[in-house]
Image (cartoon, rainbow, N blue to C red; front, side, top):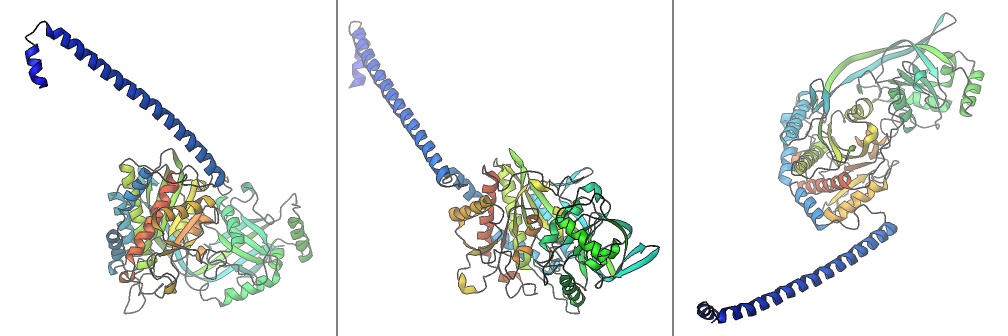
Length: 584
């Protein structure tokens, strides 16, 4: 109908203008109505937006008052979807491929310094290269992925200390007059100048290039060599300070005579301390010795009464104007000392606006090698620690991929595959104590993965095996602890088992893996693990016994925790230079 009327009116000069006037009026009214509609809508939207903003601000303030939470109240849908997408790329099949290969006979048990360990290191390095991880180890012409260092394997035969008093040579014997700690790098020193600094390390200019002597209070039955695994915490930080100051040796003077006798007997009887020991062999490595009060008095040429009085003065912080000195020569004879070359493998994802803050994800890739004898069964180490290395590799791939696709982390992430863990956590000690690639004070968290593939013992505690043992998460940082628990609640819903989360637990899990190398610098850590199972350190720790679904879930938990740590506003630790850095 409408189309016919238009055709007729185009031939009529009288009707056309009238029709156009009516049409124009209708169009004008229509547009006015449209404009009014949009004005009303815009006003309403602005009002609603303002109301929403006011409500959000009020809610945010209420949240800050009620709870110091890391996930703002809840992650946005976009944030959740982004994390979920990248987490979905962590799969059983990829994890299984890594574990089966690393635990295969081809890698010969991955013993430190041997062919299998080096093959495993090259496998991890090749994976980092293929997946666009950045190298981080500086060399003359750039950077690389391999951090090389030396380990000495030796058995101590004899150790003597010699000094000259009134032109007479006095000789002191190990295990009688003093106790040398074979877990440290013991080496010869000729006429070493030793300064007594009381109960703590003094400024560097007084100990650099010298030996340093310290009084040490202990209980009667306290073990000084490896209580809390390989170190006594009373001595650890003093040794680190001496090492950073480039001292040559540390002599702890045991003020408790009974304790010296107790540990002398332990050193004489211990099969472990008198067997082959692996130690770091570097220019910065220092030997540690424990002296009786009687021996110390003779070394420094004091009578026993004068020495007791001097110890009391230091205890009361009455430091003499002239510190006591002694000159000591150390003579060490070792059986079958062998130097081994070994390597940490390092991959790096640089952050953006908070890139100076560093998160370290670590897992050791070495194991026990092969049995001695004709059969030579190999230690597969599927759970210990091919499971942790597989998790580290997949995490590295995911974060590198996310960065390439525009989702760079705010904080930097270092993926550290350590070696020589099985012989004393030497790879992580080398990184933290000797050659950190970034300032150690910039490390805001260490997440260490070691043995995440097997069932809980006893099995009936978690029948579905949907758990992970957590050690250390709440010791240094409530922010780290909150972040990892909320990541689990939001995404993975695993049972977080804190049974072993104690420094005094008989199994001493906290001191038995690489996280301890960072925790001793007061860096917040989480140790992801499983309790010891029946195949621990046996040739029967094989790949077919791994629960791959569990490995995937735990790896995803670590991914979500790391993602949040790397991107949230709050850091688990403030960056500030600590007393272990810039000592000179």
